[in-house]
Image 1 (tube, rainbow, N blue to C red):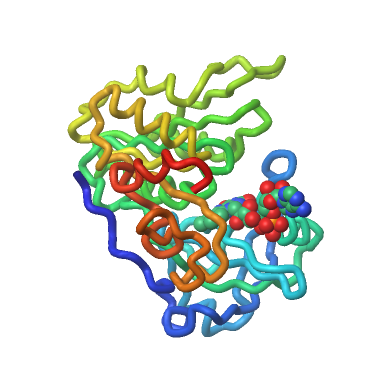
Image 2: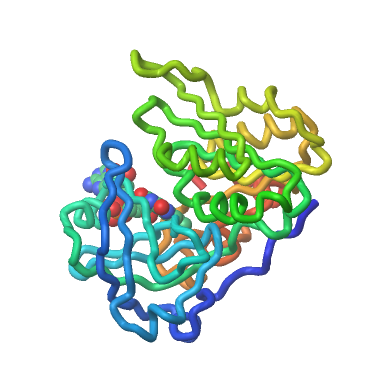
Length: 292
Ligand SMILES: Cc1cc2nc3c(=O)[nH]c(=O)nc-3n(C[C@H](O)[C@H](O)[C@H](O)COP(=O)(O)OP(=O)(O)OC[C@H]3O[C@@H](n4cnc5c(N)ncnc54)[C@H](O)[C@@H]3O)c2cc1C
């Protein structure tokens, strides 16, 4: 079993780590429509000191704040090697995300972070890495994928199993070519095809049968809806990958992100700081509890 990293208390940026409650203004540099209802916002901190010192790791998130509207946890989805510009891929579903969708290039938002335990990307060196993203889940994994692509030679293999309900739910597909060129195998699949779709139809878990890997030397990075992550862990177990080598990222409503408010309590864990990435066998029994 591969150990996950210790919890983060507010991230790598000195200013934010010492005061994780303090938000900093960031300007919208670019807005990229991904799929219907989902946009990627490229943001740059307005204060040079913050811009120059902010660092994050794959799988971490920021709290994005719109004054008078509210605050929401959003994964950082850009390459950690270029931390001066931060991407956040957001689906408009409620107060903050709908208000964000009404903003334009040049407008400002407020950010605090980074928070959370990152994906164990470096710890999986030498192994077969399987990235399983369902729906918006891939947003929290794009940073890890960029890192895996950059250091592809250090891994036995890297495979992305990318699932969505329908073809128009698959985003980041414009990056498939670059990821494939780096030596990553990408297997997209949709629950329901349409006239435009000539790819696979089924569940992302169906793709485990196609993997030609040594399960004892594999690691799975999975993010998606809870039932999908449980099904992925079962599919991984089905081909011999241990639960301790399956890492899942839990998204739970959270308010403080610093282990204080208790909103994201998950059994004995607090998702904001003990996660969001957990080894599956440490949280499986709580994932099975309805509405937890
Ligand atoms: C660690 C972490 C990372 C995340 N990363 C991302 C990410 O990268 N991208 C992303 O898009 N999201 C992400 N999320 C999810 C995001 O934080 C939530 O969707 C958040 O609630 C959005 O805030 P909001 O104010 O826009 O929505 P809210 O207003 O809080 O609404 C949230 C949900 O409640 C429902 N709702 C809202 N109002 C009502 C109502 N009156 N009656 C019934 N239902 C209602 C909405 O339909 C929606 O499903 C992440 C969450 C976590 C914890």
